[in-house]
Length: 66
Image 1: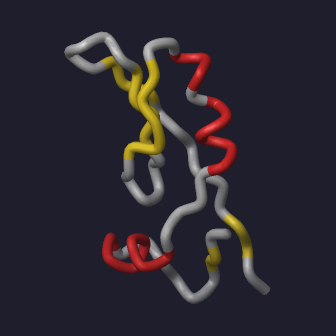
Image 2: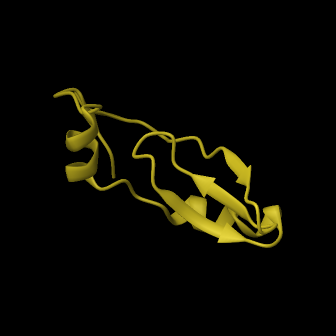
């Protein structure tokens, strides 16, 4: 049986005053916005690239990201 992992998205404030949303599974910046509450729609639509997961070494035969 496969399980789907739902990533978390820590936010960081950049030096130019924007907020970045970073996927804590594939480590990509999902979106940048002037207001933190603008990040949620991008986080909801984000799908990790399986090749990126394999590259990072986070992929196991029991997990699938969709």
